[in-house]
Length: 202
Picture 1 (cartoon, rainbow, N blue to C red):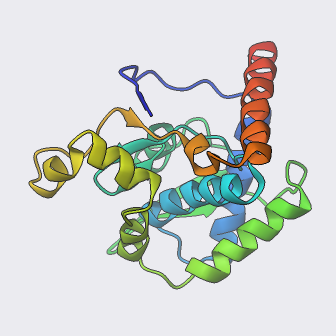
Picture 2: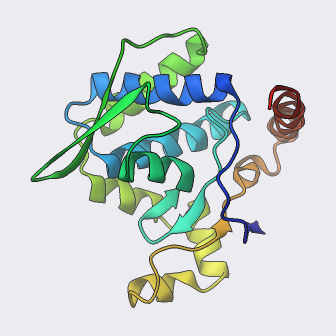
């Protein structure tokens, strides 16, 4: 578990932006309407479930421990304000229920494996009719990465007393495969590969 005091915007490669954008398009095409809180939880679940199943993250986003569960602050900004990084992929509209996210163009599957499409479909079928609060509660289960970090650093009391809504504490999804040597190696090898590719493309 790491504590990150750096609030600067994460840098993404063009391939990463394509994959994040098309993931949001796919989810918003299959779940109508899709509001921002539910989207943020589904993106997190894609990474959590993918690491558990394959040892490799789906989007490999950085997640901080916030009151409503794990949140990638960069994507939060994209769906809470005017899209910047994802401006070509998503549009936001507001109604009485909140901020609705939808795609600007057709889904492109170039960045996705068969397993990844199947994982998205599994999450859609599992959570399609779940409310945002149900998903928040699911991220708060006592076995979850969110709960472990929040408990370790005394954040639960701060959140429950409304003295804080966010934190800079980050999740280490590698802990999901701790003790499984094959998935641990896959996860660590992927992170090294990811760093190398990122340094070459940025």
